[in-house]
Image (cartoon, rainbow, N blue to C red; front, side, top):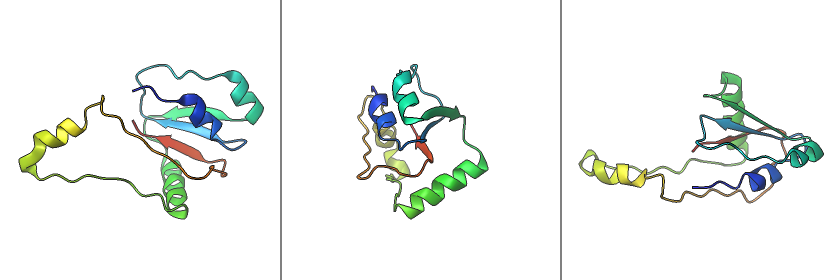
Length: 108
């Protein structure tokens, strides 16, 4: 599934940072102009530092952001794995611009 990196970077506030946690399978196409003009940045780490994780959880709490989870009994394990199919589209949205120059986490 192709991600709209331009839209994600465009949603960052001035001095905002897009922090990728983990690995993405393809290079991230970023136009330098969109970073320079908004004083934005892109960074990454395998898991994030404890301070970053605490900051992310605090941000999620302040903005009432909660995970969406699905629960399956062990008898339906094959159905659960089928739901993890990478071809299945997964979407996320935010109804407001993130004004904190904070870390945005992408979990793919």
